[in-house]
Image 1 (spheres, rainbow, N blue to C red):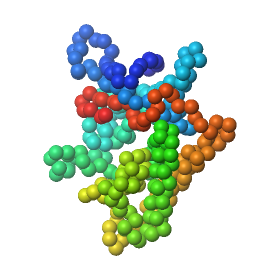
Image 2 (tube, helix red, strand yellow):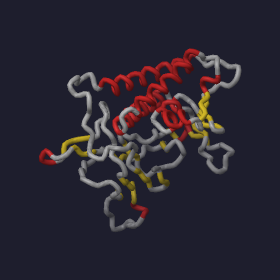
Image 3 (tube, helix red, strand yellow):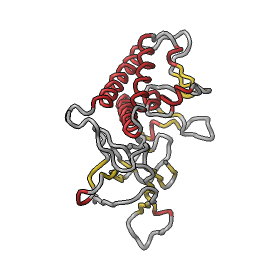
Length: 271
């Protein structure tokens, strides 16, 4: 229930353990979380990760997260049962799911938890929002990159809506250089995965297959995603309209990359 603030450096590992108890072992069994900050997260409107250092010092990167108990009856979507859950609004972990929603009857011996229910509408919306923020971060770190990705993604999504009966518009070859640079290796891929695209034999594909038209519900999902991506394009090009005098957000020192700090759970790594 307490709040702990600490200045650290890139690459410095931290281990969070359970409270001291002489009756309990002090080895790996007591570990709740392993944390290694390996990149500065660029700051963008709506997902700020920068603040002034002490005594009007340089802008520094910040990351806030909360360690919480896992509610009874919940697991990670892969079926793992972590000893704690990390709540992070900037770099969120995958959502927890109820144990009853995980299909343990799967015949896949390597991963008996492989079959879970699709993302809920709320989870899909959150995933698309985060992916759009990631494109904004990519543009902040490398000006022009995120904007190119977002515009290319809009073109793909627009074609899907205009041609719901043409499966070829729902199939992207990941080996294509343009696709690899502007979609696959950027936040744009997150939008496609949230919409139901799957990777198969060198392609990102969205069903249904040949001869079948995309349903009205899925067309609406794509249309809603287009609106979210369009808002990101506007923010990248014009800045935050709530402050028209601040078009260029000052980035924390070292924000020349993008990604998340590494979280490693006991009972299964999740980095």
